[in-house]
Image (cartoon, rainbow, N blue to C red; front, side, top):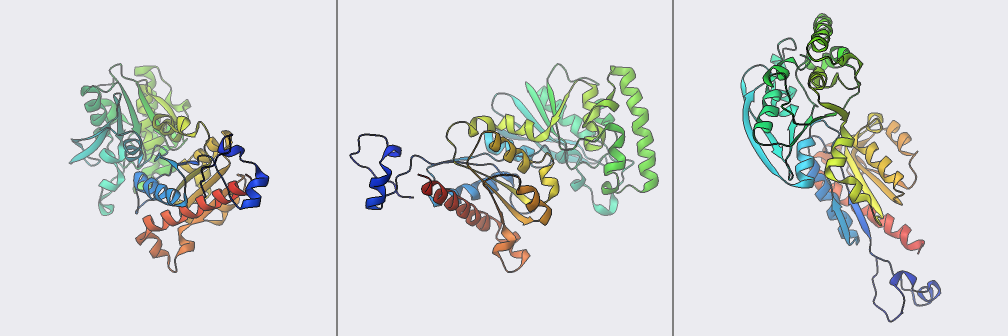
Length: 378
């Protein structure tokens, strides 16, 4: 991009086209971009991915670049919100998924909103694959984290519920909270829409449950739904998303928590609306693997839909891998570039080893393409 000062009395954007063509000068008003990726699982967290994208976009010549890491309510929600808004990370020892103590991280954002991520306290990643026990796994530690956040003055709590080890319907967390949210608004950022009694059938196998255990867990959830209805008056069976995190979402809903799509919770809290307001020329998002599920309520599809609604002229998605069905889904969005890191290396393993550099290069390419298109239309 070329920027020039001249004596033309109007604004730079009104510099006569015919004169620009005659002297070979292109003049563009301020260029603005928003980079808002999810994590690249196993390589870059959300803030790292946003920083790499921003570096590439700035190198291409964009003057204003907003870094806004996002998530869909699953793992990475805490990193995204702290990366976008700041705040303090805090650590608390709580009951782990199999009863052993674990040191879990949560965050207090500016303004008093606490962020609790279930994966930190009751996550599947905390359990050795050889010792998974879906019948015994508990959500108690997540309840203890929420209780700690409330005791430390949280005015609101956002709970990200991805990556759970338990299918206890949230009963252990509810017990840890004393069956009360203590008059503090709690929002559960759901990354799935499954119902309460579907939790074991949908996700039990990935937590190590056999078919017989899935049947047992489903019967437990059915009885627990009756218990919640009797004690709180809330029918969790009818709530979309109540099956998230093995039913933890339903258990918290029984106490009065609101269940909302995870992307929308994170995007609103991070300020995506404000970031997209005004004269934004380019929006870049992305994640580790772009597939058909990426367009079903996940971060990438959410960003593209919001940006399209705001009529942002140039969009780009950067992903480690891109499947054929994802490219087909992406074709429905006008002015969208899809860039795969695996297209930039000889071997797929290089995309993991050099993720930050490759993301920066892809963002640079997306930004150069946007500027060239913008220049042609000036």
